[in-house]
Length: 316
Ligand code: ADP
Ligand code: MG
Image 1: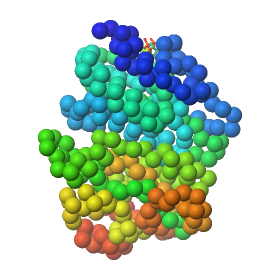
Image 2 (image 1 turned 180 degrees about the horizontal axis):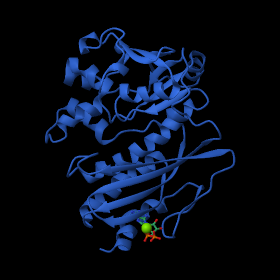
Image 3 (image 1 turned 90 degrees about the vertical axis):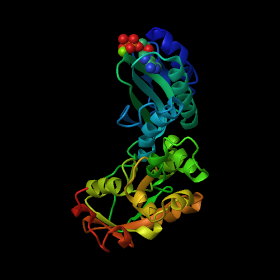
Image 4 (image 1 turned 90 degrees about the horizontal axis):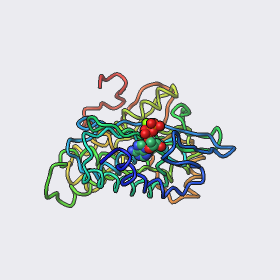
């Protein structure tokens, strides 16, 4: 199968479903064309996934299709943006129909779920590597950044943490238990928090998506905003499945394991109250921003975090 036949068969159908008036020209020309409405800013981001580095060798292609687009779109959610379109650069060892059918099926499901259309791409032969560039828009000047956190803001997360990290040890299991299936779903099918991201625009002072672990990613907000924070380990949301599977280790996974793609955000009290009055509250308050630099975690003594432990001082 040649390059163009491959694109026509597996990827053109995703582009044909483009329902976004903002994508004026999709695949097939030298460039795609996106029109950015007046009063909106274009936000964009690129992510590369390498087999054996970002996903396991022989990872099921349908999961990979969903996951590769979901983790890229999660960056748009963290900025409060509406997804518009994406490009797909595929490096493939060969044109394996079964792999291509699975991958494009997962990708199509994600593309439908997130409302983002395939605009074009590049197809080459080489080690399995997937690069996606995602484009979205947000009201001019209102994109959520990492740099706006202020002392006194509360720190929130959008959902339970640690499940995807726990899933890694069960990836190869042929007959996972119900709890194992629950955490595996978080790894295979991450859900970018687009709706909450949009709701946070004009309200949250800073946001980031949790790809590397809560502590590591919150530290990016603290550094960019030049502030510190204290978290209460007792308030970190944990799923029932995670607690059942990992017991005392659940909290440590929730603090330090990645791949969950929930958002971590900071918000002043009054804006949080406003948000809660409009939305069914899905935010969990886990701590507060302080002017003193550093990240302190209360009630995590069992993990070896002293009360008032300055996480910046640790070499991790
Ligand atoms: P060029 O040589 O001008 O860069 P290509 O031959 O690489 O063009 O690609 C031809 C067309 O096919 C382009 O419009 C490109 O966006 C599209 N395309 C290539 N690979 C993919 C892919 N994996 N998914 C979607 N569109 C693709
Ligand atoms: Mg090209």
